[in-house]
Length: 437
Image (cartoon, one colour):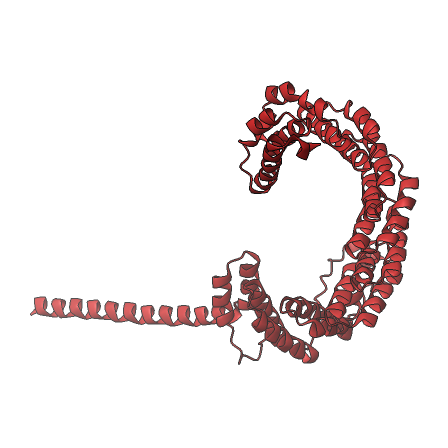
């Protein structure tokens, strides 16, 4: 009996222990669950999404944004849509980014901005004992200034997105709405001008550039852009004037003169290009490229002797132009001077080629024949033009056999046609010597 009672008591105790443990477990679980819910409500998902975007963890950022409770009384729509806009911008979802930024702007207009908490230092005994009244140096928080600053920043974000879509009108409008932020850098004025120019609003283009130049007088890029627009509109004198203002600011450079001259040449403004290059040549007498470019302009006017002189002058400062000087003197009929310049050429193959061209020009066929050994030595007869020149020289002095010996190697279609004419003439001369008198 006693044993049964003890057993029963023991069972009851075990049951009680189990019941108590179960109850405690439930209470713990309930408390943990309640605590977890409290923690979850306090998680800054928008802040975490911002950090994820910064670390380029875009998938995780989207997961955090999806966890934001938009129905919560603490929901910060302005901040949420700003971060959502940045997220879409990073993923080049441009249209979605624009929509998000627009919502952020509207939310910012009604958002309540709170002054940041000011952390005050503890006062020590000596400061308490001081009779001097402590002044409050904390600046007054300007809610509207803060709101305006946020809105302007959002319009700057919109500017970037609209430009990606080549929506130039809304790009400019966003810049205007960005207030002082949209005017804070010279590059923003070049952006304005570019957008106006893309819309063929040329008056607004130059107004934007002029405003930028006035606001940022030390920035030369605005002047350079002005020059390019004038050039593109074929306003060449205005382009030249703008270019000179630009060069005065950055320092006169021969490269800038050459670039400007090439622009005029491309527009077939030969006289203007010559005038500009003559001016440049006075300033940069030793710049070979200016002389060569100027020479080419005079050649367009068929002024071969002037061109020959300019090419030779340029060759004094840069030997790579020596062959051009030789060739131009040959074309101008200055054969003796061309031969003189040719003697200065250290490239033996090029020198021999030009010498043959000069002798052909002067009708000195026997001198060409005299160069046959040199042509063979440098393996230059593989060039069919030179072989044809040698064949023609033999034909011209009446040595038909040697002429034929070289003509048979001609395979080039154009030269072959000429060789055929020579062969027919040789045949006529052979049949009737009176034909070749």
